[in-house]
Image 1 (tube, rainbow over the protein chains, first blue to last red):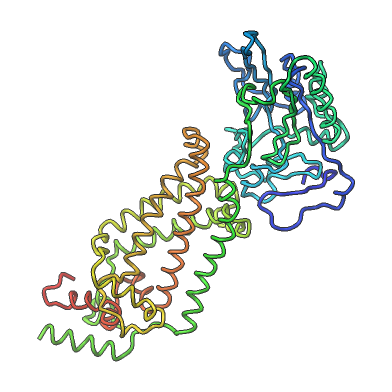
Image 2 (tube, helix red, strand yellow):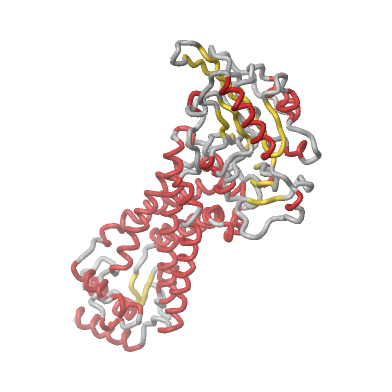
Length: 301
Length: 214
Protein backbone atom coordinates (compact mmCIF):
# COMPACT_ATOMS: atom_id res chain seq x y z
CA UNK A 1 0.00 0.00 0.00
CA UNK A 2 2.20 2.82 -1.26
CA UNK A 3 -0.19 5.68 -0.54
CA UNK A 4 -1.11 5.34 3.07
CA UNK A 5 -2.71 8.75 3.16
CA UNK A 6 -5.45 7.51 0.80
CA UNK A 7 -8.08 5.14 2.08
CA UNK A 8 -9.14 2.24 -0.05
CA UNK A 9 -12.69 1.38 -1.02
CA UNK A 10 -12.06 -1.71 -3.12
CA UNK A 11 -9.17 -4.05 -3.84
CA UNK A 12 -8.88 -6.58 -6.63
CA UNK A 13 -9.24 -10.29 -5.82
CA UNK A 14 -9.88 -9.63 -2.15
CA UNK A 15 -12.87 -10.87 -0.20
CA UNK A 16 -12.23 -9.14 3.12
CA UNK A 17 -12.86 -5.45 3.96
CA UNK A 18 -10.35 -2.85 2.76
CA UNK A 19 -8.56 -0.35 5.02
CA UNK A 20 -11.22 2.30 5.45
CA UNK A 21 -10.77 4.09 8.77
CA UNK A 22 -10.89 7.55 7.21
CA UNK A 23 -13.51 7.02 4.52
CA UNK A 24 -16.07 9.39 5.99
CA UNK A 25 -13.79 12.41 5.57
CA UNK A 26 -12.93 11.81 1.93
CA UNK A 27 -14.81 13.50 -0.88
CA UNK A 28 -14.99 11.92 -4.30
CA UNK A 29 -12.79 13.67 -6.80
CA UNK A 30 -13.00 14.11 -10.55
CA UNK A 31 -11.05 15.53 -13.44
CA UNK A 32 -13.13 17.47 -15.92
CA UNK A 33 -11.86 17.70 -19.48
CA UNK A 34 -13.63 20.34 -21.54
CA UNK A 35 -13.10 19.32 -25.17
CA UNK A 36 -14.54 22.65 -26.30
CA UNK A 37 -11.61 24.50 -24.69
CA UNK A 38 -8.85 22.12 -25.78
CA UNK A 39 -6.39 23.45 -28.36
CA UNK A 40 -4.44 20.19 -28.74
CA UNK A 41 -1.12 21.59 -27.46
CA UNK A 42 -0.18 18.35 -25.68
CA UNK A 43 1.08 20.16 -22.59
CA UNK A 44 -0.90 17.58 -20.62
CA UNK A 45 0.99 14.73 -22.31
CA UNK A 46 4.29 16.39 -21.53
CA UNK A 47 3.34 17.11 -17.94
CA UNK A 48 2.33 13.48 -17.54
CA UNK A 49 5.71 12.31 -18.86
CA UNK A 50 7.49 14.80 -16.67
CA UNK A 51 5.75 14.01 -13.41
CA UNK A 52 5.64 10.24 -13.87
CA UNK A 53 9.17 9.95 -15.31
CA UNK A 54 7.96 8.38 -18.54
CA UNK A 55 9.82 8.51 -21.84
CA UNK A 56 8.11 6.77 -24.74
CA UNK A 57 10.05 5.69 -27.77
CA UNK A 58 10.25 8.27 -30.50
CA UNK A 59 7.72 7.09 -33.07
CA UNK A 60 7.08 7.93 -36.68
CA UNK A 61 4.66 10.42 -38.17
CA UNK A 62 1.55 8.82 -39.55
CA UNK A 63 0.18 11.94 -41.18
CA UNK A 64 -2.06 12.95 -38.29
CA UNK A 65 -1.31 14.89 -35.14
CA UNK A 66 -1.83 11.96 -32.78
CA UNK A 67 1.60 11.38 -31.29
CA UNK A 68 2.18 8.78 -30.06
CA UNK A 69 -0.46 6.94 -32.05
CA UNK A 70 -1.84 5.13 -29.06
CA UNK A 71 -1.59 4.77 -25.32
CA UNK A 72 1.42 2.74 -24.21
CA UNK A 73 3.02 1.73 -20.95
CA UNK A 74 5.04 4.97 -21.30
CA UNK A 75 2.21 7.21 -22.54
CA UNK A 76 -0.66 7.25 -20.08
CA UNK A 77 -2.51 9.99 -21.85
CA UNK A 78 -2.74 10.76 -25.56
CA UNK A 79 -4.51 13.55 -27.43
CA UNK A 80 -6.72 12.10 -30.11
CA UNK A 81 -7.53 14.41 -33.01
CA UNK A 82 -10.47 13.92 -35.31
CA UNK A 83 -11.64 16.08 -38.17
CA UNK A 84 -15.41 16.24 -38.29
CA UNK A 85 -17.45 17.85 -41.00
CA UNK A 86 -20.67 18.96 -39.40
CA UNK A 87 -24.04 18.93 -41.23
CA UNK A 88 -23.55 22.61 -42.19
CA UNK A 89 -20.41 21.60 -44.06
CA UNK A 90 -18.02 23.25 -41.61
CA UNK A 91 -14.95 21.53 -40.33
CA UNK A 92 -14.73 20.87 -36.60
CA UNK A 93 -11.53 19.75 -35.00
CA UNK A 94 -12.53 17.51 -32.13
CA UNK A 95 -9.66 16.84 -29.77
CA UNK A 96 -9.98 14.44 -26.90
CA UNK A 97 -7.42 13.76 -24.22
CA UNK A 98 -7.67 9.99 -23.88
CA UNK A 99 -6.65 8.02 -20.82
CA UNK A 100 -8.09 6.15 -17.87
CA UNK A 101 -11.63 7.25 -17.03
CA UNK A 102 -11.41 6.04 -13.42
CA UNK A 103 -14.78 4.28 -13.54
CA UNK A 104 -16.87 4.11 -10.43
CA UNK A 105 -17.48 0.45 -11.37
CA UNK A 106 -14.04 -0.46 -12.76
CA UNK A 107 -13.92 -3.43 -15.15
CA UNK A 108 -10.15 -3.75 -14.67
CA UNK A 109 -10.46 -4.14 -10.92
CA UNK A 110 -13.27 -6.64 -11.34
CA UNK A 111 -11.18 -8.75 -13.72
CA UNK A 112 -7.84 -8.57 -11.87
CA UNK A 113 -6.92 -11.90 -10.21
CA UNK A 114 -4.01 -10.59 -8.12
CA UNK A 115 -4.97 -9.49 -4.60
CA UNK A 116 -4.53 -5.74 -4.23
CA UNK A 117 -2.89 -5.14 -7.61
CA UNK A 118 -5.74 -2.79 -8.52
CA UNK A 119 -7.36 -0.59 -5.91
CA UNK A 120 -10.03 2.04 -5.87
CA UNK A 121 -9.36 4.74 -3.32
CA UNK A 122 -12.14 6.24 -1.27
CA UNK A 123 -11.88 9.36 -3.44
CA UNK A 124 -12.75 7.27 -6.53
CA UNK A 125 -9.31 7.05 -8.18
CA UNK A 126 -8.58 3.62 -9.65
CA UNK A 127 -4.90 2.82 -9.27
CA UNK A 128 -2.63 -0.03 -10.36
CA UNK A 129 -0.07 -1.21 -7.83
CA UNK A 130 2.49 -2.59 -10.26
CA UNK A 131 4.49 -4.35 -7.57
CA UNK A 132 1.50 -6.68 -7.12
CA UNK A 133 0.76 -6.97 -10.84
CA UNK A 134 1.33 -10.46 -12.24
CA UNK A 135 1.14 -9.47 -15.91
CA UNK A 136 -1.87 -11.58 -16.92
CA UNK A 137 -3.60 -8.83 -18.88
CA UNK A 138 -7.05 -9.49 -17.36
CA UNK A 139 -7.37 -5.73 -16.73
CA UNK A 140 -7.14 -5.19 -20.49
CA UNK A 141 -9.88 -7.80 -20.96
CA UNK A 142 -12.08 -6.12 -18.35
CA UNK A 143 -11.64 -2.46 -19.35
CA UNK A 144 -14.53 -1.02 -21.38
CA UNK A 145 -12.30 1.85 -22.64
CA UNK A 146 -9.22 -0.09 -23.84
CA UNK A 147 -6.87 1.76 -21.51
CA UNK A 148 -4.37 -0.50 -19.66
CA UNK A 149 -1.14 -1.35 -21.47
CA UNK A 150 1.25 -4.15 -20.53
CA UNK A 151 4.90 -3.16 -20.62
CA UNK A 152 7.06 -5.30 -22.89
CA UNK A 153 9.96 -4.67 -20.53
CA UNK A 154 8.58 -5.66 -17.13
CA UNK A 155 5.24 -7.29 -18.08
CA UNK A 156 3.28 -5.06 -15.71
CA UNK A 157 0.13 -3.10 -16.54
CA UNK A 158 0.26 0.70 -16.62
CA UNK A 159 -2.23 3.53 -17.01
CA UNK A 160 -3.09 7.00 -15.75
CA UNK A 161 -3.02 7.14 -11.94
CA UNK A 162 -4.93 10.44 -11.87
CA UNK A 163 -1.69 11.48 -10.17
CA UNK A 164 -2.79 9.68 -7.02
CA UNK A 165 0.60 10.52 -5.51
CA UNK A 166 0.02 14.25 -6.03
CA UNK A 167 -3.63 14.10 -5.05
CA UNK A 168 -2.71 12.28 -1.84
CA UNK A 169 -0.74 15.33 -0.69
CA UNK A 170 -3.29 17.88 -1.84
CA UNK A 171 -1.92 18.74 -5.28
CA UNK A 172 -3.87 18.67 -8.53
CA UNK A 173 -2.90 16.17 -11.27
CA UNK A 174 0.08 17.21 -13.42
CA UNK A 175 -1.99 17.53 -16.61
CA UNK A 176 -4.41 19.88 -14.86
CA UNK A 177 -1.55 22.03 -13.66
CA UNK A 178 -0.01 22.24 -17.13
CA UNK A 179 -3.11 22.93 -19.23
CA UNK A 180 -2.77 26.49 -20.59
CA UNK A 181 -6.42 27.00 -21.55
CA UNK A 182 -8.12 25.69 -18.44
CA UNK A 183 -9.63 22.85 -20.45
CA UNK A 184 -8.69 20.44 -17.68
CA UNK A 185 -9.88 21.09 -14.17
CA UNK A 186 -9.86 19.08 -11.01
CA UNK A 187 -11.89 19.09 -7.82
CA UNK A 188 -14.64 17.22 -6.06
CA UNK A 189 -16.90 15.28 -8.34
CA UNK A 190 -19.79 17.40 -7.12
CA UNK A 191 -17.99 20.65 -7.98
CA UNK A 192 -16.87 19.36 -11.39
CA UNK A 193 -20.41 18.24 -12.23
CA UNK A 194 -21.66 21.67 -11.24
CA UNK A 195 -18.99 23.46 -13.30
CA UNK A 196 -19.73 21.24 -16.28
CA UNK A 197 -23.44 22.07 -16.09
CA UNK A 198 -22.63 25.79 -16.29
CA UNK A 199 -20.33 25.25 -19.24
CA UNK A 200 -22.97 23.17 -21.01
CA UNK A 201 -25.47 26.03 -20.65
CA UNK A 202 -22.85 28.38 -22.09
CA UNK A 203 -22.13 26.05 -25.04
CA UNK A 204 -25.83 25.64 -25.76
CA UNK A 205 -26.21 29.41 -25.92
CA UNK A 206 -23.42 29.43 -28.53
CA UNK A 207 -25.26 27.04 -30.82
CA UNK A 208 -24.10 23.66 -29.59
CA UNK A 209 -27.59 22.32 -28.86
CA UNK A 210 -26.35 18.87 -28.00
CA UNK A 211 -23.57 19.92 -25.65
CA UNK A 212 -23.43 17.87 -22.51
CA UNK A 213 -21.46 16.13 -19.81
CA UNK A 214 -19.97 12.68 -20.44
CA UNK A 215 -20.24 10.77 -17.15
CA UNK A 216 -21.48 7.39 -18.41
CA UNK A 217 -23.95 5.64 -16.11
CA UNK A 218 -23.12 2.20 -17.54
CA UNK A 219 -19.91 2.13 -15.49
CA UNK A 220 -21.49 3.89 -12.51
CA UNK A 221 -20.17 7.26 -13.68
CA UNK A 222 -16.50 8.14 -14.05
CA UNK A 223 -13.96 10.19 -12.16
CA UNK A 224 -12.67 11.61 -15.42
CA UNK A 225 -15.48 13.40 -17.24
CA UNK A 226 -15.71 15.21 -20.54
CA UNK A 227 -17.67 18.24 -21.61
CA UNK A 228 -18.56 17.44 -25.22
CA UNK A 229 -20.04 19.83 -27.77
CA UNK A 230 -21.75 16.80 -29.30
CA UNK A 231 -22.70 14.75 -26.25
CA UNK A 232 -25.29 12.94 -28.37
CA UNK A 233 -22.48 11.49 -30.54
CA UNK A 234 -19.48 10.64 -28.34
CA UNK A 235 -18.23 8.39 -31.15
CA UNK A 236 -17.19 11.52 -33.06
CA UNK A 237 -14.40 12.00 -30.55
CA UNK A 238 -12.10 9.26 -31.88
CA UNK A 239 -14.53 6.50 -31.01
CA UNK A 240 -15.44 7.43 -27.43
CA UNK A 241 -17.91 4.72 -26.32
CA UNK A 242 -21.53 5.90 -26.38
CA UNK A 243 -22.69 3.48 -23.70
CA UNK A 244 -19.66 1.93 -22.04
CA UNK A 245 -20.22 -0.85 -19.55
CA UNK A 246 -18.32 -3.81 -18.22
CA UNK A 247 -19.00 -6.52 -20.81
CA UNK A 248 -21.62 -9.11 -19.79
CA UNK A 249 -19.03 -11.79 -20.63
CA UNK A 250 -16.64 -10.27 -18.09
CA UNK A 251 -19.44 -9.94 -15.55
CA UNK A 252 -20.34 -13.60 -15.95
CA UNK A 253 -16.68 -14.68 -15.87
CA UNK A 254 -15.95 -12.66 -12.74
CA UNK A 255 -19.42 -12.84 -11.20
CA UNK A 256 -21.60 -15.91 -10.85
CA UNK A 257 -19.02 -18.27 -12.39
CA UNK A 258 -16.51 -17.88 -9.56
CA UNK A 259 -18.56 -18.95 -6.51
CA UNK A 260 -20.62 -21.48 -8.48
CA UNK A 261 -17.61 -23.23 -10.00
CA UNK A 262 -15.58 -23.17 -6.78
CA UNK A 263 -18.57 -24.42 -4.79
CA UNK A 264 -19.25 -27.22 -7.26
CA UNK A 265 -15.61 -28.36 -7.26
CA UNK A 266 -15.61 -28.46 -3.46
CA UNK A 267 -18.89 -30.41 -3.49
CA UNK A 268 -17.54 -32.94 -6.01
CA UNK A 269 -14.44 -33.57 -3.89
CA UNK A 270 -16.55 -33.76 -0.75
CA UNK A 271 -19.06 -36.13 -2.37
CA UNK A 272 -16.24 -38.46 -3.42
CA UNK A 273 -14.78 -38.53 0.07
CA UNK A 274 -18.10 -38.84 1.91
CA UNK A 275 -19.28 -41.64 -0.37
CA UNK A 276 -16.02 -43.50 0.31
CA UNK A 277 -16.69 -43.16 4.02
CA UNK A 278 -20.32 -44.23 3.56
CA UNK A 279 -19.81 -47.39 1.49
CA UNK A 280 -16.21 -48.17 2.45
CA UNK A 281 -13.37 -49.00 0.13
CA UNK A 282 -14.11 -50.97 -3.01
CA UNK A 283 -11.81 -53.93 -2.42
CA UNK A 284 -11.14 -57.13 -4.26
CA UNK A 285 -11.92 -60.02 -1.94
CA UNK A 286 -10.44 -63.47 -1.65
CA UNK A 287 -13.51 -65.00 -3.30
CA UNK A 288 -12.97 -62.77 -6.34
CA UNK A 289 -9.42 -64.07 -6.63
CA UNK A 290 -10.66 -67.66 -6.30
CA UNK A 291 -13.43 -67.21 -8.87
CA UNK A 292 -10.94 -65.58 -11.22
CA UNK A 293 -8.48 -68.43 -10.70
CA UNK A 294 -11.15 -71.08 -11.39
CA UNK A 295 -12.29 -69.32 -14.54
CA UNK A 296 -8.74 -68.98 -15.77
CA UNK A 297 -8.15 -72.70 -15.24
CA UNK A 298 -11.31 -73.54 -17.16
CA UNK A 299 -10.24 -71.28 -20.01
CA UNK A 300 -6.82 -72.88 -20.18
CA UNK A 301 -8.06 -76.40 -19.48
CA UNK B 1 1.93 -60.06 -3.20
CA UNK B 2 2.66 -61.63 -6.54
CA UNK B 3 5.24 -59.92 -8.75
CA UNK B 4 4.47 -58.47 -12.15
CA UNK B 5 5.34 -61.62 -14.04
CA UNK B 6 3.42 -63.95 -11.79
CA UNK B 7 0.56 -65.86 -13.43
CA UNK B 8 -1.76 -64.26 -10.83
CA UNK B 9 -1.21 -60.80 -12.27
CA UNK B 10 -2.43 -59.18 -15.46
CA UNK B 11 -0.67 -56.29 -17.14
CA UNK B 12 -3.10 -53.36 -17.29
CA UNK B 13 -0.74 -50.53 -18.18
CA UNK B 14 2.55 -50.79 -20.08
CA UNK B 15 5.53 -48.73 -18.93
CA UNK B 16 4.88 -46.24 -21.74
CA UNK B 17 1.26 -45.85 -20.68
CA UNK B 18 2.23 -45.33 -17.05
CA UNK B 19 4.82 -42.73 -17.99
CA UNK B 20 2.28 -41.02 -20.23
CA UNK B 21 -0.29 -40.92 -17.46
CA UNK B 22 2.05 -39.48 -14.85
CA UNK B 23 3.52 -36.90 -17.20
CA UNK B 24 -0.03 -35.69 -17.86
CA UNK B 25 -0.61 -35.63 -14.08
CA UNK B 26 2.47 -33.50 -13.44
CA UNK B 27 1.53 -30.92 -16.05
CA UNK B 28 -2.11 -31.02 -14.93
CA UNK B 29 -1.12 -30.23 -11.34
CA UNK B 30 1.08 -27.34 -12.44
CA UNK B 31 -1.51 -25.93 -14.85
CA UNK B 32 -4.43 -26.47 -12.47
CA UNK B 33 -2.71 -24.91 -9.46
CA UNK B 34 -1.62 -21.82 -11.39
CA UNK B 35 -4.97 -21.59 -13.19
CA UNK B 36 -7.13 -22.00 -10.10
CA UNK B 37 -4.97 -19.38 -8.38
CA UNK B 38 -6.07 -16.87 -11.02
CA UNK B 39 -9.66 -18.09 -11.03
CA UNK B 40 -10.72 -17.34 -7.46
CA UNK B 41 -9.03 -15.24 -4.77
CA UNK B 42 -9.71 -18.03 -2.25
CA UNK B 43 -7.27 -20.16 -4.27
CA UNK B 44 -4.62 -17.51 -4.96
CA UNK B 45 -2.29 -19.26 -2.50
CA UNK B 46 -1.95 -22.03 -5.09
CA UNK B 47 0.18 -19.67 -7.18
CA UNK B 48 2.91 -20.42 -4.64
CA UNK B 49 3.45 -23.83 -6.21
CA UNK B 50 4.98 -22.22 -9.28
CA UNK B 51 6.78 -19.50 -7.38
CA UNK B 52 4.16 -16.76 -7.05
CA UNK B 53 1.76 -14.80 -9.23
CA UNK B 54 4.06 -13.60 -12.02
CA UNK B 55 5.71 -17.01 -12.41
CA UNK B 56 2.27 -18.63 -12.48
CA UNK B 57 1.25 -16.35 -15.34
CA UNK B 58 4.49 -17.05 -17.21
CA UNK B 59 4.49 -20.83 -16.73
CA UNK B 60 0.76 -21.67 -16.79
CA UNK B 61 0.36 -21.59 -20.59
CA UNK B 62 3.44 -23.74 -21.13
CA UNK B 63 2.26 -26.26 -18.52
CA UNK B 64 -1.15 -26.32 -20.19
CA UNK B 65 0.33 -26.80 -23.62
CA UNK B 66 2.56 -29.62 -22.35
CA UNK B 67 -0.49 -31.25 -20.74
CA UNK B 68 -2.39 -31.15 -24.05
CA UNK B 69 0.51 -32.72 -25.95
CA UNK B 70 1.17 -35.37 -23.28
CA UNK B 71 -2.54 -36.19 -23.10
CA UNK B 72 -2.69 -36.69 -26.85
CA UNK B 73 0.36 -38.96 -26.89
CA UNK B 74 -0.93 -40.94 -23.90
CA UNK B 75 -4.57 -41.30 -24.90
CA UNK B 76 -4.33 -41.66 -28.69
CA UNK B 77 -3.34 -45.37 -28.58
CA UNK B 78 -5.98 -46.10 -25.92
CA UNK B 79 -8.76 -44.15 -27.64
CA UNK B 80 -10.30 -47.19 -29.39
CA UNK B 81 -10.91 -48.90 -26.05
CA UNK B 82 -13.34 -46.12 -25.21
CA UNK B 83 -15.96 -46.63 -27.87
CA UNK B 84 -19.39 -46.68 -26.21
CA UNK B 85 -21.17 -50.05 -26.34
CA UNK B 86 -24.72 -51.11 -25.54
CA UNK B 87 -23.67 -52.54 -22.17
CA UNK B 88 -22.31 -49.10 -21.20
CA UNK B 89 -25.84 -47.76 -21.29
CA UNK B 90 -26.94 -50.46 -18.83
CA UNK B 91 -23.97 -49.61 -16.61
CA UNK B 92 -24.89 -45.93 -16.61
CA UNK B 93 -28.53 -46.60 -15.76
CA UNK B 94 -27.30 -48.59 -12.77
CA UNK B 95 -25.16 -45.68 -11.53
CA UNK B 96 -26.91 -45.87 -8.17
CA UNK B 97 -25.43 -49.37 -7.66
CA UNK B 98 -22.03 -48.03 -8.71
CA UNK B 99 -21.93 -45.43 -5.96
CA UNK B 100 -23.49 -47.85 -3.47
CA UNK B 101 -20.62 -50.28 -4.11
CA UNK B 102 -23.01 -53.01 -5.35
CA UNK B 103 -20.79 -54.09 -8.19
CA UNK B 104 -22.42 -57.53 -8.30
CA UNK B 105 -25.54 -55.90 -9.73
CA UNK B 106 -23.71 -54.20 -12.60
CA UNK B 107 -23.42 -55.49 -16.14
CA UNK B 108 -20.04 -56.82 -17.23
CA UNK B 109 -17.43 -54.22 -18.04
CA UNK B 110 -14.69 -54.31 -20.69
CA UNK B 111 -11.29 -52.65 -20.37
CA UNK B 112 -12.99 -49.43 -19.31
CA UNK B 113 -16.40 -48.83 -17.76
CA UNK B 114 -18.85 -46.24 -19.09
CA UNK B 115 -17.76 -43.69 -16.49
CA UNK B 116 -14.13 -43.98 -17.56
CA UNK B 117 -15.13 -43.69 -21.21
CA UNK B 118 -17.19 -40.58 -20.61
CA UNK B 119 -14.33 -39.11 -18.60
CA UNK B 120 -11.87 -39.47 -21.44
CA UNK B 121 -14.27 -37.74 -23.84
CA UNK B 122 -14.91 -34.94 -21.34
CA UNK B 123 -11.19 -34.47 -20.75
CA UNK B 124 -10.43 -34.43 -24.47
CA UNK B 125 -13.23 -31.93 -25.12
CA UNK B 126 -12.10 -29.68 -22.27
CA UNK B 127 -8.48 -29.78 -23.41
CA UNK B 128 -9.44 -28.78 -26.95
CA UNK B 129 -11.49 -25.87 -25.58
CA UNK B 130 -8.69 -24.91 -23.18
CA UNK B 131 -6.08 -25.06 -25.93
CA UNK B 132 -8.03 -22.87 -28.34
CA UNK B 133 -9.20 -20.32 -25.77
CA UNK B 134 -5.82 -20.42 -24.03
CA UNK B 135 -4.02 -19.34 -27.18
CA UNK B 136 -6.39 -16.37 -27.51
CA UNK B 137 -5.82 -15.19 -23.92
CA UNK B 138 -2.04 -15.86 -23.94
CA UNK B 139 -1.20 -12.20 -23.47
CA UNK B 140 2.55 -12.32 -24.09
CA UNK B 141 2.34 -13.88 -27.52
CA UNK B 142 -1.09 -14.10 -29.08
CA UNK B 143 -3.75 -11.80 -27.57
CA UNK B 144 -2.64 -8.97 -29.83
CA UNK B 145 -3.99 -10.86 -32.83
CA UNK B 146 -7.54 -11.07 -31.49
CA UNK B 147 -10.36 -8.61 -30.93
CA UNK B 148 -11.48 -7.76 -27.42
CA UNK B 149 -14.83 -9.60 -27.71
CA UNK B 150 -13.06 -12.81 -28.76
CA UNK B 151 -10.66 -12.43 -25.85
CA UNK B 152 -13.51 -11.90 -23.37
CA UNK B 153 -15.44 -14.91 -24.68
CA UNK B 154 -12.26 -16.99 -24.56
CA UNK B 155 -11.53 -16.00 -20.97
CA UNK B 156 -15.00 -17.17 -19.99
CA UNK B 157 -14.76 -20.38 -22.03
CA UNK B 158 -11.29 -21.09 -20.58
CA UNK B 159 -12.60 -20.77 -17.03
CA UNK B 160 -15.63 -22.93 -17.77
CA UNK B 161 -13.68 -25.70 -19.54
CA UNK B 162 -11.10 -25.71 -16.75
CA UNK B 163 -13.86 -26.02 -14.17
CA UNK B 164 -15.30 -29.06 -15.95
CA UNK B 165 -11.81 -30.54 -16.34
CA UNK B 166 -10.95 -30.10 -12.66
CA UNK B 167 -14.33 -31.48 -11.57
CA UNK B 168 -13.79 -34.47 -13.89
CA UNK B 169 -10.32 -35.09 -12.46
CA UNK B 170 -11.71 -34.88 -8.91
CA UNK B 171 -14.16 -37.67 -9.81
CA UNK B 172 -11.31 -39.62 -11.44
CA UNK B 173 -9.06 -39.31 -8.37
CA UNK B 174 -11.91 -40.16 -5.98
CA UNK B 175 -12.71 -43.29 -7.97
CA UNK B 176 -9.05 -44.31 -8.17
CA UNK B 177 -8.59 -43.97 -4.42
CA UNK B 178 -11.87 -45.74 -3.77
CA UNK B 179 -11.33 -48.77 -6.02
CA UNK B 180 -8.38 -50.44 -4.28
CA UNK B 181 -5.74 -51.71 -6.68
CA UNK B 182 -6.22 -48.89 -9.21
CA UNK B 183 -3.37 -46.71 -7.98
CA UNK B 184 -0.89 -49.64 -7.76
CA UNK B 185 -1.98 -50.59 -11.29
CA UNK B 186 -0.96 -47.16 -12.56
CA UNK B 187 2.27 -47.28 -10.53
CA UNK B 188 3.50 -50.77 -11.36
CA UNK B 189 1.32 -51.75 -14.28
CA UNK B 190 -0.37 -54.90 -13.03
CA UNK B 191 -3.60 -55.93 -11.37
CA UNK B 192 -4.57 -59.21 -9.72
CA UNK B 193 -6.76 -61.69 -11.56
CA UNK B 194 -9.45 -61.05 -8.95
CA UNK B 195 -9.30 -57.28 -9.52
CA UNK B 196 -9.79 -57.72 -13.24
CA UNK B 197 -12.51 -60.31 -12.63
CA UNK B 198 -14.37 -58.04 -10.25
CA UNK B 199 -14.15 -54.70 -12.02
CA UNK B 200 -13.60 -55.46 -15.71
CA UNK B 201 -14.85 -59.00 -16.28
CA UNK B 202 -15.19 -58.85 -20.06
CA UNK B 203 -11.62 -57.55 -20.28
CA UNK B 204 -10.51 -60.25 -17.81
CA UNK B 205 -11.94 -62.93 -20.10
CA UNK B 206 -10.09 -61.45 -23.06
CA UNK B 207 -6.86 -61.44 -21.11
CA UNK B 208 -7.01 -65.05 -19.83
CA UNK B 209 -7.71 -66.48 -23.26
CA UNK B 210 -4.69 -68.71 -24.04
CA UNK B 211 -4.04 -66.78 -27.27
CA UNK B 212 -4.10 -63.45 -25.47
CA UNK B 213 -1.25 -61.20 -26.42
CA UNK B 214 -0.26 -60.07 -22.94
